[in-house]
Length: 219
Ligand SMILES: C[S@@+](CC[C@H](N)C(=O)[O-])C[C@H]1O[C@@H](n2cnc3c(N)ncnc32)[C@H](O)[C@@H]1O
Image (tube, rainbow, N blue to C red; front, top):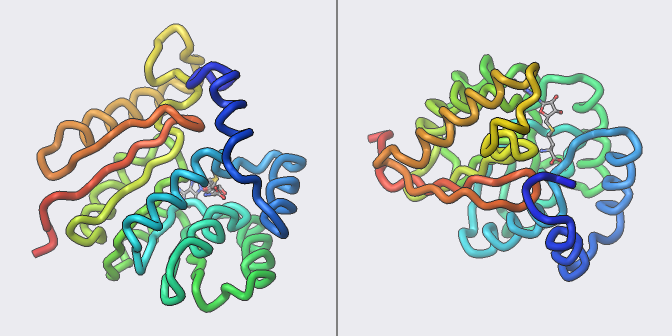
């Protein structure tokens, strides 16, 4: 039970959306067996649809893990589409490199090694889409850099924003996760109420926020 949706809703959605095929399926199996958290199938599907609508040329991802979501995103982008992804763990980078190589995407997915909070200040490129999927208590710290590096009319997708239901219900909060809950609530309050943004919180997976940047604050 995810605490986000009733199991029957989640099961139904997973049944109805197309299953992954080929090597992506193997990556899903690897992630499950080795407890590597990757995007839920319904979130992957949501991102594919969004990428088809928005047609981003450049996406920045924070949190690569084994490269699964980077590959899902590139698969849906046009031939010139590129992803830059930040990851701090050497073992994950090694696996991500291997997986990206399998797809022949080494020219299209660039992995930057390091703590996102150290890497982000040095990124100068502009991105049409930013995918936040790393340290859940740090989204608020990442946000100024997302604003700086996001193109006008760009979108931010933030994963796990309902964090096992804890964000919406104090009764579910586990004591050692209190900081994550407090900081995620601050983040959601900011992206939902700052006039620069239009945001929607979508109860799929572990909760996804979709944020549209209305104004160009980079000028
Ligand atoms: C949920 S996993 C990413 C899953 C991936 N986006 C996917 O769906 O295939 C989060 C990853 O972010 C990395 N991470 C967490 N905090 C980070 C930080 N502050 N800087 C860089 N990487 C971080 C973790 O090592 C982990 O591999």
